[in-house]
Amino acid sequence: MWALKTSQNFSKLSSSAFLRSLHSETTAKGIGIIGVPFDKGAGKVGTNEGPNALRDAGLIDEIRDISVNIDVKDYGDVHYELTKSSGRRINNLRNLEHVAACNKALAEKIEEITNDNRMPIALGGDHSIAVGSITGLRRKMKSDDLCVLWVDAHIDLNTSSSSLTGNMHGMPVSLLVKELRKEWPTIPILEWCQAQMSLKNFCWIGLRSTDYYEKLMMEKYGINYFDMRDIERMGIEKVVQRALEKINLDGKKKLHVSFDIDALDPLYANSTGTPVMGGLTLREGVFLMEQAYNTGTLSSLDLVEVNPLLGNERDVENTVNAAKLIIQAACGSNRTGNL
Image (cartoon, rainbow, N blue to C red; front, side, top):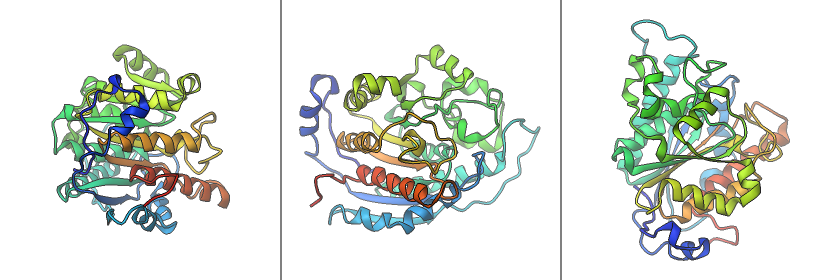
């Protein structure tokens, strides 16, 4: 799996010293792009147009322009066939059959990309696709070998019984972690995802909109998170450093970043289904992704919830351009220039 290696202890180095210690040893540098044109997990249509909007805006070529050493392969889009669920119907899960089938197909594609020794970048699509991307990654490693930075205005920790909408883009984390397994009924068409990760391997950045049930779970399990107050108080550099210390102190785990574009303030990314004022600036979002890349452990990325059907032409252009900058930072782009 594509990643830079480091065994430095985050807590023993200043941020600048830590970054200078990186990039001493590399493995293969392949990148695999997979589009997930999917909006059945959201309450609004349009995120199915996200992958092509990013491609049409030149994303692939711009990644290739970062360095002559970057090998990028576009694996096309995920396609799936519906499998009807058996047994009793599960209430309050809108489009369950679609969500299950799409994520199962995505997990298989992510596994294929990692087998090709490439870093998977999943272009969403709504945030329910994180179930498939993380499941596909975890098949190649032990449950505790993967950690996740969840960059989002929302914590996405609802279940079928707690969700106010039934939209599954607000539930992916609860489907992935063992602590909440008992909160779910048995769902045969989702059994393949196997909730084996621990909440201790997740950390959230950018939170500013959580439901009552989610807040209870945050308190019950001592969830790692940094909300917008923390960012305002500490600054984005310290927040990212501490977030990584919490989930990957010795730098031995692979890092997955699941980046919801609504983590950014609507001033920078308004073409998304659930925007929340008071979010990250674009500079903070890019810096966060640069720091994730510089750890040498970044192995995969989701970029989700870009919705080209929402907002005016300028909104769409700004949102797509912001998403491209986030992705390029994950691929090693340097704002002072690339060689």
